[in-house]
Length: 270
Ligand SMILES: Cc1ncc(C[n+]2csc(CCOP(=O)(O)OP(=O)(O)O)c2C)c(N)n1
Image (cartoon, rainbow, N blue to C red; front, side, top):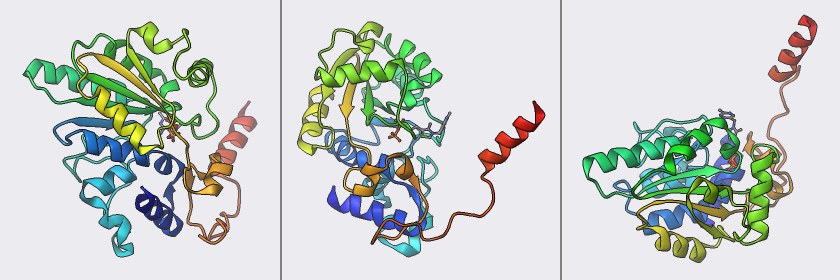
């Protein structure tokens, strides 16, 4: 885990990329590949901006180890790149629907592979996630939805679901107002998703479930890099930075941002 973190930080410092999401998911990823048999067992990463550890563990570490190869591997899951990736993604909130379809296909073909979706608490607030949950809850065979709850979307996560997740964290998963159970899911909670032993145990316990289950995992976005924990939003995605003091390598571009231009244009039009 420490080696993977070091490589994520070094490459991001050199060329930029997603930082906090990948640092937070390291143990979960190692545990997944330890317990499950990918690529027969299938995992769908929501957005897939948190797949640097997955890529390193599935034959693509060279694109982090060798600066000459930094651009040889793409930053999101990519089926053209590896049999361990099943979709080219980038949008939030699609993983539950995609995994539910894979579970259905497995059932129709009489297969036995395990299907998992990993979705962040931010992406879980997107509308399509609810369509996915609505259908996933009716699945008759194995289907696990991992909710990677690091309490952050790009900015701090907000809304009713965020409140429900906070109650579940505060009660170690015991709060009776459990939205996942209300849908009909079996539910388990992992208090420290950055503890490798806990994650391996949790995955071993649910590996062979024969019904839909939500595994709610509490993780720390930015784990292992202090500036990313102090300023989560600023380290969701980073431009190249100096390893000595986290300062940006280049000054931000002069002039207004694209968002500011859009706001000004709309403001002028109304
Ligand atoms: C449809 C859509 N809306 C917005 C975005 C921008 N976006 C990228 S990641 C993300 C949220 C990430 O939060 P979470 O799912 O909790 O994952 P984390 O990065 O915290 O691990 C957002 C809003 C997107 N990729 N797709």
